[in-house]
Every structure is written in C-alpha cells, then in structure tokens.
Amino acid sequence: MKVAVLALQGAFIEHEQVLQRLGVETVEIRQLKDWQQPIDALILPGGESTVQMRLLKELGLYEPIREAILIGMPVLGTCAGMILLSEGRLGTMDIEVRRNAYGRQLGSFHTVDTVKGIGTDVPMTFIRAPYIERVLSDKVEVLSTVDGHIVAARQGNQLATAFHPELDDGTRLHELFLGMVVGRSDKE
Ligand code: GLN
Image 1 (cartoon, rainbow, N blue to C red):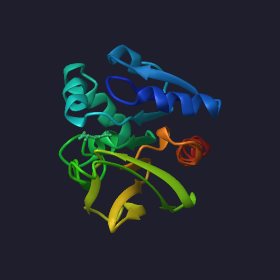
Image 2: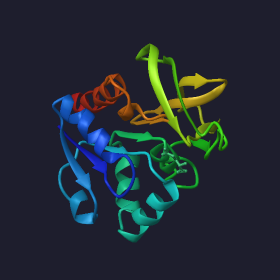
Image 3: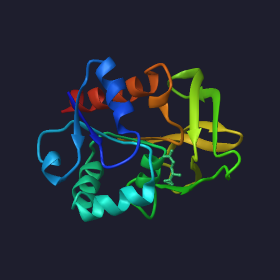
Image 4: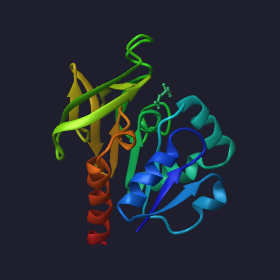
C-alpha cells in the first residue's frame, strides 16, 4: 500500500510520521509528476487552505486529484484538508465548512471526545480550525460533534476531520482511514 501525502504546504510531515509508525509507505506530492505513479490513497493535510488551493491549481494537480477522489480513491482531509474537500473547493464532499470557525481567541484548543468507529476518548487538537456548518446530502455520515458542531465526517471514500489527528499520540484515526483503503482493495 502506498499513501500519498500532499506536501505543498502545512502539516504534512506529521502525517508521514504517523504512517511510517504504522509501517505504511508514503510518497510526497509536490508536483504533477509525483502524482503520476500508482497510489492507493491520499492525505490532504492541515495548513492554509487558500494557499493550498492556489498551488493545486498552479501545479495542475487540482483536476487529477479531484478526478481520482470522484472515482473512489480513499482520501483523508484534516483541517485545511477538510476545507479542500468541501463545496466551493474540490467539492468532492457534500459539506459546507466555516473557516476559522472558532474565532481568534478560541482559535486553538485541545479536547477529548467521541468519534464513531474509534472510541469515546479521542484526543483532538484544533488549530484555527473549521467545522462543518452544513451537510448537503445524506451520503455524509457525521462521525463526531464537539459543542454541537460537526468536526468529523465520512462520505464513502472520503474522511474529514476539523482537528489534527497527526499531532496527537495515537494512530487510531489513521488506522480507521487505512481500513477504508484496505476495504477498497478487497473489493477489487
Ligand atoms: N485556518 C486554516 C484555513 O483556512 C486551517 C487551519 C489548519 O489547517 N490548521 O485554511
């Protein structure tokens, strides 16, 4: 299994480190040619979504990545990565997000809460985080809410979190994602 990590900007190294701890091969996507090899899954990391969007378009990665997700490539989007999946950006996930949703003062915080399919004690680090403001179709399954706001969701091959699972100890969120990747290859 080879998991690509979009490495244009933001917290991509931390995702690679988690995957390496799990014994999974990773490949950094920095330009179009990195994308032109067999890849089983993709991680869109946190960072600055407007910068990431601009770079995706400039580098010619926007369309191929969008296509791959639409035809079923498993993708994990965290924080800015979740924003990229949302309506108005890549638009592959039927969600509307509110950026920097917690305001300046509460921009960054840590909590522990439930994520469906993982457990009740999942550590969550939010950094100038978005949340999912609206779910646009019943294909979206809400996996977690914090203070009444959706912070994790899944739509088929797409998994999104408003928090940064790669910054906490523990690998359960990534394991959930890798389960989606393995589940997919089983079907083929
Ligand atoms: N505020 C950032 C954005 O809009 C997301 C922050 C993050 O990824 N930690 O894109």
